[in-house]
Length: 375
Image (cartoon, helix red, strand yellow):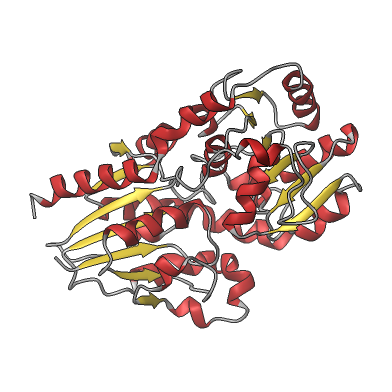
């Protein structure tokens, strides 16, 4: 079969891109279509593909402001010509699932969520936006919601990345979806060896052993990194933050001296920070959330907001704890509770082996093989 993969944009290596990476491994000859591609921003496995981009690729300042072209994205994704492909697999959290295919093609969408910008996360993205942006989005929201629903009819089968997202697909699209959890490389993200706890880590001079909490996140409004900063400003405990994004300047101004910003790190360094933290702080409501799974694979507990995908990956008082409100006060209360508890790092790791990338690949291949019988 001739196969195409479709992904919203290639501008960084986050959870959705790790799903795409696994799809590229399963289908090494597949062509890849995306709205915007920034070379060097994703893994070599993805960048080996033949990558086709949309007209948005050539618009002004696209590398920094591609999200501002949201109103153009439905038209851009529909302009791709996929008539020659037998199988189209879209990896979608925005518009990728709206790609037009041939009537003889099979289109399977791996959905990270229905378009979050116009549904559940609308207020998170635009609640504090400038007045003119709010005014434009107020008009555009209904159009984008309608397009999101109508374009969902182009998909033959949906796969949801969690039960959380499966319910959203049912609610917005009135479609069924099979849940296949995203892949995590549990062979790479492992517990530190016993000796690593006894000696100073020299990989990075900023890394001290076992005395800090950790945040790993893009700096988007809905990620709520500000909550972690506000809580640790009050507590005074060491907090290290790995990530970057549109709110970086704002967050750095908010933080006191006990908080360090490390930028995005290579996986080898990221793993060391996971292995040597006291716990991961996860203040956002995610569709699924790969970061808490990576931390648990390294044997580390998670302090998470008790909504969204974290409820499917963290076990209360066994692999972490939840806080009930997205406020600094609620998070502080959870951290103080956490410090009275003991966790078994082996049990923490065992909890997330069910998300291993080999299991993901096997389930995806089985699902697609079954559906391709009807081609």
